[in-house]
Image 1 (tube, helix red, strand yellow):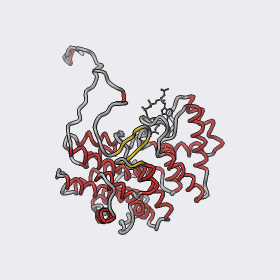
Image 2: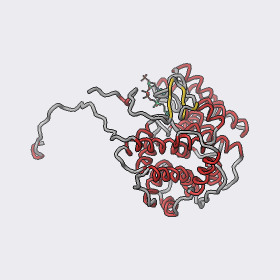
Image 3: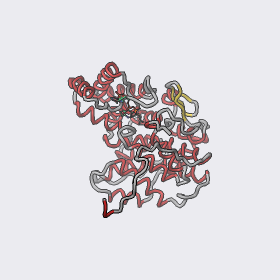
Image 4: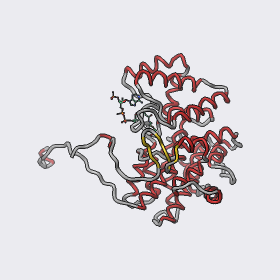
Length: 370
Ligand code: CMC
């Protein structure tokens, strides 16, 4: 038995949800470029869950279900108020989502219908939790979700208490579409491994959030912004990048396990970053980002991934840096839940082997003789 480090190139399951073939990403066969330009996030949620684009009445029903389920149990809001000051936002989200199971009477009901209902509740409530957490830690009261608006609109509204501008809603909608699913990425794999034991959907999502939190995965978008802030101005870019490369340190937002010729999502975020920079009158983050991209690509051959330009996009939307990864989770909730539903449909325990590298045999030495 020989291990493949990081399971690179290992095909661990079949899936009909999303594919990456020759560098092209599709959701249910539809190119991500078309979805990014034309779809609402809610249409994508439907597509991922049910395998086809919704008709108008199917979309209306989903929107209604999402709105009706957007409020979280009051106990969750009370719990958020009790979290220690300065707690990590992804840790808070992981704990709150896990706690949702305690207030869901269907938490352990395993029929497909019940799991779809739970997927709707999770998708509807994840943004409410992130926005409530962000307000509570600033000593503000959480804002109840409103009806008749998109998930992107509602999130921005619940975060600020203000009517968001159309351009901000559009940008967030596009970012949610682009992050919604990505084949067997680490967090989705974690979710599938957990539910393949026939554990419940909340356990699967809790595992997924834990995996997304890391800086090699979803945590990279926050790390990119931290890098841009550390660099400060365009004058410092070259020396910063050179130093990182010389020290063999990673530049956040670059590289990918699957894409070697560039992440197809990055160009959409780059365009948005430029547009929002122009609208806000602050091109600094975009200009620094393009300069970093040029240097890293020419010196190391690495291309930006989805996380690189999303950092400046969210900053232009005036979203605090430590909410970037929770926003990734709001979007990926759709993909995670779709994969969990798919795993339950055709389940087998996921239990690979390990290549043993310890001693072949070792004696048991009684404690008094060690
Ligand atoms: N900066 C500098 N060098 C890099 C980078 C980077 N961002 N990414 C890869 N390399 C180098 C790495 O040092 C190694 O070089 P060498 O062969 O000389 O040792 C080579 O490229 C292969 O890297 P690896 O880490 O073995 O590749 P991997 O497939 O295991 O990791 C990755 C993929 C995305 C974790 C990695 O590229 C990385 O750490 N990137 C930075 C973090 C990041 O942006 N993560 C977001 C990923 S995309 C969205 C998501 O999934 O959330």
